[in-house]
Image 1 (tube, one colour):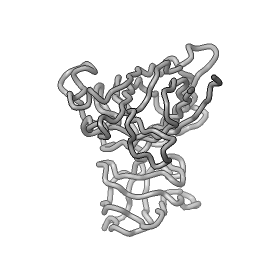
Image 2 (cartoon, helix red, strand yellow):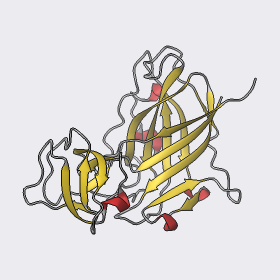
Image 3 (cartoon, helix red, strand yellow):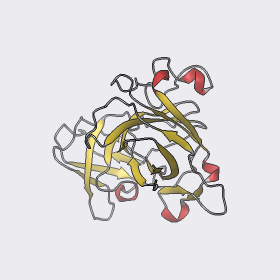
Image 4 (cartoon, rainbow, N blue to C red):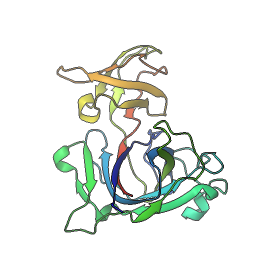
Length: 263
């Protein structure tokens, strides 16, 4: 049987970015991933890792958990991102009993075993493999539930889920892009004036934006090409939740995972 390869890009939603993460915080809750049906090996892992206030930061170790549906039901939430999963310090104490039957795999991601290119890119890091370092292959097998779970891609696909835990803590995805308008902005507004860090250093068109407390802002259409680059224009329908003067605008998905699968 010939091996087949597939690549999936995963952009988990983070929330409550007003403060840095601490060890054993939930980094992101279950994120659905649609992949071709059948058992497969998670072979490779690449990461885009956003920096702090326009500068690359030192990436921290992450624990990844993979899950499947049970009787057609998705895994239950592990809690609120940027909050501790439990009072314990171990993964076993952190996971709820309700989620346990859904879990199919676990992987500790040791970023020290991954090449870290960040300085040349200024505001974010790229993490990946290198011949001079241990290959950060995941070396785990996954397969979704045998019973069908609704997939937007059709019957040839299955849905699995991935959640992340901050192993070391101190991840800081603050941007330093601050709303600059005394009256704030209302739902439906499409242009947001900011000060602080230039928006085009930390954002790219298509990014989903949130306020530092997790309130949804909207999807970025463009950053003004002027001297300060601090005026943000949103795609329709514009601002989703009202924001106040002094709010920090953050990227809802500051970490992107690119995972290579082999069937």
